[in-house]
Length: 52
Image (cartoon, rainbow, N blue to C red; front, side):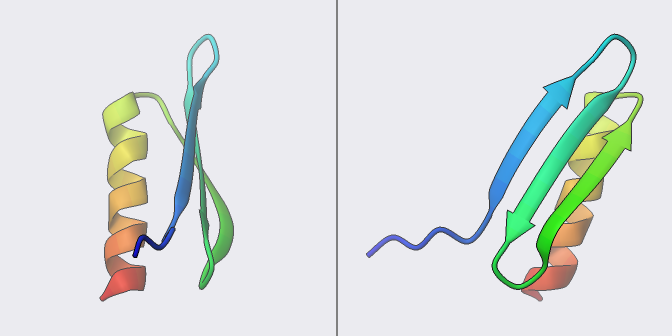
């Protein structure tokens, strides 16, 4: 049986990247950064903290 544990949406405008992370426990959080890697790392840290 599959269970949705999070929803992540990545966007980019001219000079910034954005991520919207939604989980059942933490709700909606938004992250911004100048590189995709920066935003991805922020999301990964947030998920590691929430899931541990």
